[in-house]
Image (tube, rainbow, N blue to C red; front, side, top):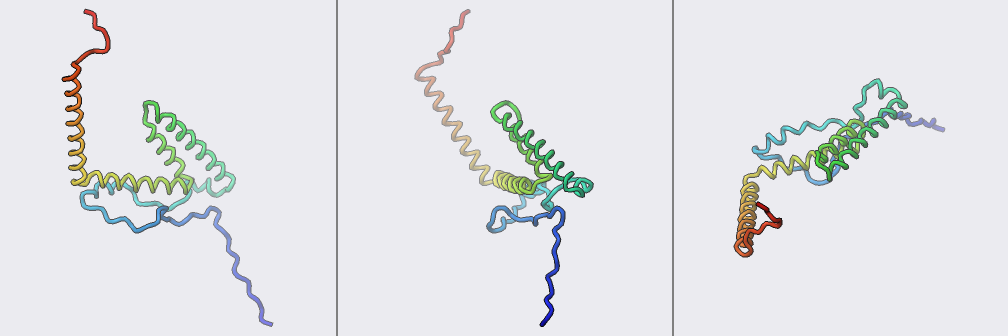
Length: 169
C-alpha cells in the first residue's frame, strides 16, 4: 500500500492584501492625447490595496482592529459633516471626499471607490479640455445667453420696468 502524502498546510498572512483589480470590467481606456498629459500627470500611480497603518499597529490583531475602528469612526464623522454641509454654505463634496480618503487609508472598498472616482474625474477633465468640446460648450453658452437677453428685452418691452416695492422719496 503506497504511503499517502498530505498537502502542505497553507497559513494565511495576518492581514492579506487583495490584488489590485479594476472595479469596472471592460476594455482598457485609450491613451490620453497630448493635451491631457498635464491633467493625467496629477493623478498618482495606483498604490497596492490594503491597510496603511503603521507596522507597530499591524503586528497586533487587536490593536489593528482598534485602529480600524478609530479610522472608521473618524471618517464617518467627516463624511457626516460633509453631508450636512451639502445644503449649507460650505465645501460639502470636498469634506465628503476627505472622509473617503481617510477611510481609504484602511479599507480596500474605499480605496477602490476613490480610484474609480479619480479615473472618472480625470476622464471628465480630459473631455472638457478637448478643443471641439470647448468650442461646442462656448457656442451653447453664447446661444443660451442670447436667448435670455432676448426674452428679458421682450418682457421689458411688453411690461416695462416696474419695481415690486414702493419707493418713497
